[in-house]
Image (cartoon, rainbow, N blue to C red):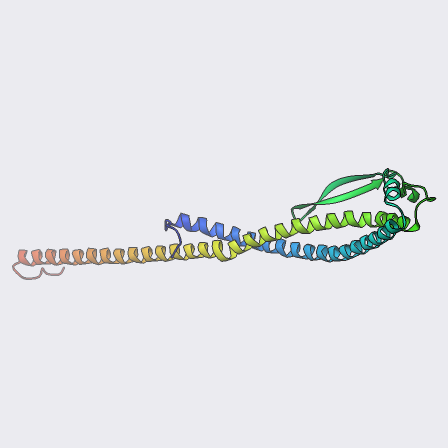
Length: 235
């Protein structure tokens, strides 16, 4: 039985069949989109795992070097050495469309390409461990930006996968079965109406034949009465 009250007419049946074909095509396209999004998401997750491991290792090296430098240098000297950085970074953000999802892309560039510009201090009164820490941080910066890009991409893809999955399930388990049930109901009603009309027509035909036979008998009776109960001579 249909879930809602519908009008069992041929026009409604045609409309539902058109909607069903459109829904089944949309269901297939959404399933293909979901599968492709899952493939893209798994690629992003694998890259995210590798980047996170590399970034964590780089930060651990930098933290260890800073810890040793802080132990060898006075707090005032360490703070003064890092107070005025010489290098600046410009970050640009654009978007890439992945299966109708706009994911961010980060491009950064430093104000100078000289690798020595990452050290904002002289080397006379600082320790080599501080140099190692600053160098480790400068090396891990690009991976950190890429990691931020990848993690945002994975978040957006996961949200789109969830939305697409809900739409696929709604079509597969609710909308399409409901339309199929409505089509079946209307078809049964139309068949019942057609059978009822056929039976009515047969009854009307029988009544007309019966009336015609009775009229013929009445005419024959009148003819017999006219000729005195004898049938007229055949010419």
